[in-house]
Image (cartoon, rainbow, N blue to C red):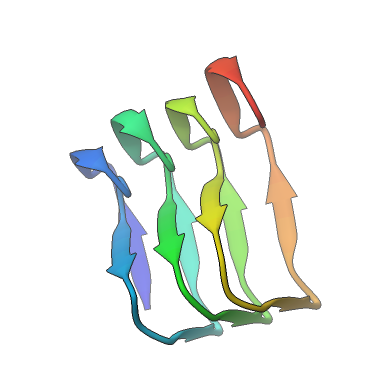
Length: 88
């Protein structure tokens, strides 16, 4: 899965609300959220394997905004994600 250059209020590439989210072998690049989670907004269990989040931006959580649930990241690259306020 490759998601590039998307824009949203929350979760520039992926928005997950009260559900389980699993991502593998993916690239989320240059996405933007006007509020939270430049690449991913997750409220629930989140599992990411063998993936890259690069150059994503948001006010809160340039790469990811995560709340609640269990989070697992294995063999992932998070690089050059920028919050415009707090919480890289």
